[in-house]
Amino acid sequence: MNRERPLISVVVPAYNAADTLGQTIASVLDQTHRSLEVLVVDDGSTDATADVIARAGAADPRVVPVSYGGNRGRSAARNAGIDASSGDWIAMVDADDLIAPDRFERFLAAAGRFSGANLITDDRIGWRIDESGVVRVEHRFPGRHTWRVGEPRPLDARRHFTDKFGHIDLMVSRGFLHSTGIRYPDDLAIGEDLYVDNALLFHPDCRPVRVARPTYYYRLGPTSRAGGAVAGFGDMVARVDRPELTKLYHRWGPAQSWLFSREDGKLADAGRIAEEQPTNAAWVAPPSALYGVPNLLAVKALQWAGRSSDRSLRPALVADITTQLSRSV
Image (cartoon, rainbow, N blue to C red; front, side):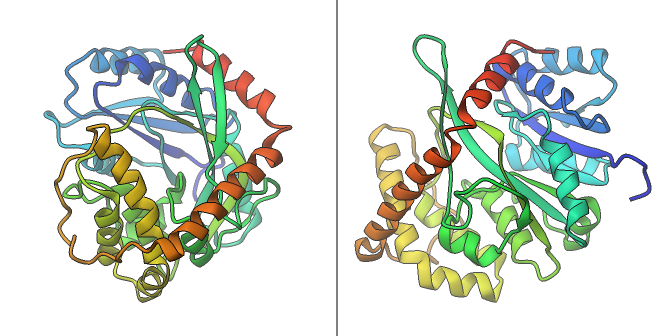
């Protein structure tokens, strides 16, 4: 890094996100680490998203509007933001989520603490607004190695995949990302972020660190998707094509497929999932309840353990999210 204060490029893909985008941009701009560029990528929105972006850019020069015309999807939007970025580090924030005010300050402190760290992640905590308009913090998304909060420490990619195998909300060094050539695949119906997460985590040069705090605030709500998670997860592993990841998938895939099949069934019953299948859908581990049920029970137990661990943090989280929702650009 050649700056006294490292520049962080925050990419925010936005499609018809006018109702929440202003709060998200404000959340990023209010970081205690001020050296930021916020690349807001309009993916061909038809609502007032473009107006929100223009207003934010006029009010703060750190906001960089990015547009390519038309609707090409979230992967293309993220890639456009990456290509337009100039920071020492690159991070992603979705257009309806929020982040803790000191998130990036914590990230940089963790990067400085562990020599060679080139990917930093934290804990995602879900939240929603109930029928009375009150913020409700749900739970983190834990694994056996991530349910405790505490000091930063190196992240074991193998254990992350085995115990959690879900998303991470990452900040990656510019040099490492560009050296790998990894980008979001715009032909995937589901799992494009999982692909990037695991392609980076299982790269031989990756040195990941986990900030063991819930500093990414993930807005819970109805979701729709164009393909099933069972096939999508297998497709992701096939595309990453790392021997270590493939071996883990063959070991744990039946349990993961069973868990994903339950989720797919609920979405299908609600009419929120299509039948479109990813390119490598044939490469799928068969679901197994024998392995899946114990895994599900373990996940539920960890969620409750995480809630207990987070009890002292919850009032401050609710207060912070509530305050952030009152601000917008």
